[in-house]
Image 1 (tube, one colour):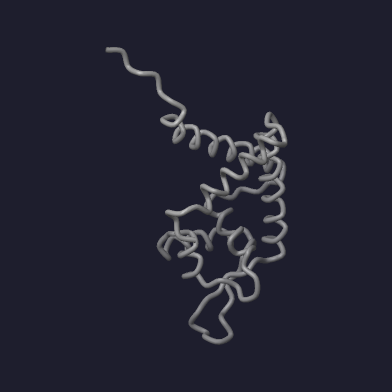
Image 2 (cartoon, helix red, strand yellow; image 1 turned 60 degrees about the vertical axis):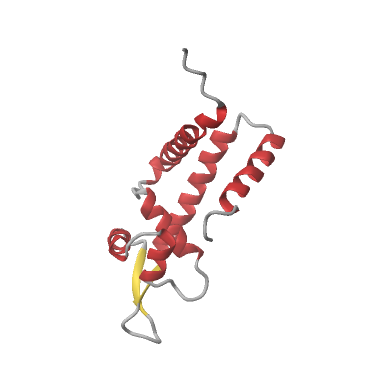
Length: 151
């Protein structure tokens, strides 16, 4: 008996992985001239720190947001600190607590990363019409914000 043709649904996981990789390659290409060498995990940590308003996040907060063990955050922060993108600061209310804040270099790097991400997305989405982009945006919002994942 011949093997049935795969349906679009059975190909979705592979398509999502391929699209993610394509987005990462495009973003890396758009960053090549910037002389910025961050891993995706370092970039994500930088974005998380950049989105925190008010009090800078604690290492434990970052580990929770990244869904990793605290030791992994230490390694990421060490690398970003070595590149001058973040700095450790003591919590004024509890000197045993370390908080992570962006430096000026980190803020400018984050702007460059956002710009590269937007350019990469535009490149990938170029074949779609405005209506298709709107539909895709709605579908992605449903998947990202939908049930099954804690926020």
